Image (cartoon, rainbow over all chains, first blue to last red; front, side, top):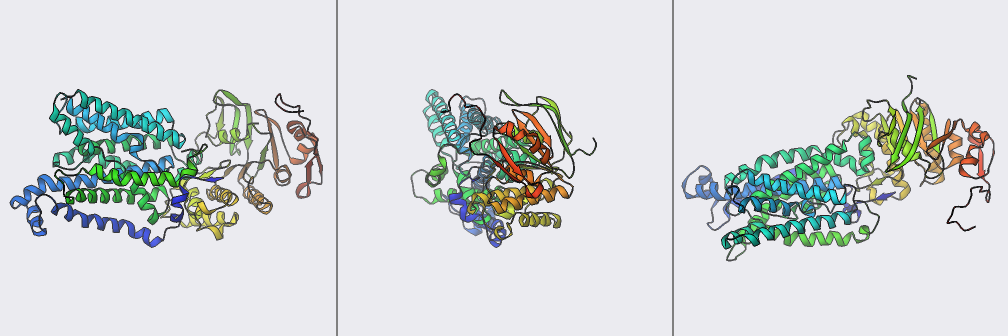
Length: 350
Length: 261
């Protein structure tokens, strides 16, 4: 009789105080509401709250800055962050593994490859539905490949190694595309794009990603009961009425769709999906269903905050938000691995 | 027979390429407390899983066909709790087939959960995180989860393997009560004295087939246990007073190729 999945660091969170649990979602929405005006105000041209109010009414240059630059940027950060947080929580619930997240499957890297191929093969203009579709195909391909290599019941180490291999493969293929690119400006553009950013995005980018993210998000939220039942393993979940095949395909498909669409408009942004559920658990406990919504909101807040942060750091060119999330996320990932060292030995099923 | 709650008719079940069950027929009726026993690898867990609809059958069929979630409760052998949720929340998972979200449990759900906690002696532990439990306590939580389903058919795989003697007896009494209330219980057990004291019916499996299926006294009289386990059992008394012990050094099974003689 064993108790799995990171009890070492989720241990103290098993009995959440009901008060904090109930307050978490409103509190997170409040944080997002507070972050939103900040994100609209801060940038090369600082806007006062008055500018924003008049800009939102369509008056003056503030309106152009808001509608052409800041608002799409804010919306994308929230959408993509929310999707990353939600899919991280969903994948952790599905795999019963607190180390799972889209980047573990190489999904963002493979989505980026799909997008880069479409972008620089001249198949499409930068803003068309071919872009998210290619990115979604890339993300789906990577997750399927990892499941194919490792199996859905795979040992955690097998899964991480397969993900690493797939992610390296996608990275190498992206490098190849860059390598073959005849245009040095295009190369710079791809490289910067790959770092992940919400700079210079428009409402068309929002429109490209939003439908995919909304549908994927709704699908993943509907899977919550299945993830909760999986707390007792696949067999018991099946006797509780969970259709494992459907749950698997919805989880894989919706994660890939949401991540792919996000990557298509923002580049590769990693580790939000890993961090967000861990930040939610102290408040809502380990229950994989209760973690879903707060993780999405935390992901949205994290990415919005990171996107504000990159505009505050004085630098000649803006620091890419994907770099910031990696700088925060990788140490967190390493901490989680280190704190689970004893659990990563042979015999543990993911 | 119309009152059969669950049955397997002439099933062959393979795990990988290895045929584990061969042409096996078995049925469970309301009010029956049956114990499934036999040597390791006899196919007990495979039969339980096939009955629960968790394994595909190569031939034959498992009935009833159209089964709704919540009609069978299944306790996995050595089951795991993957997330350290509270004991009560884990037991509440048993109410999932009835659409119970943890936040909105009906009075029926609450009653089923509290009764299951009480039956397994967990009321005092109900707010504890699963990660803080001992192996035996975690086993009881999983048992309580299965009981909370209140399914007409209860399939339990080694429910008492990690329990202390008092809890073993208490769990057997809970299973017996379940059957007296009209449920059908099938439990895989290795503790033969307990199995024979409590069960109405003992099903002995060997090599993927049912070697015997009868009341405890008949099983003892037929020497089936001696045959399938390769041991010489001594027994006296009947029912609750049964004493059953294998004679030490009585093993009659032939040594395997790698065994030292």
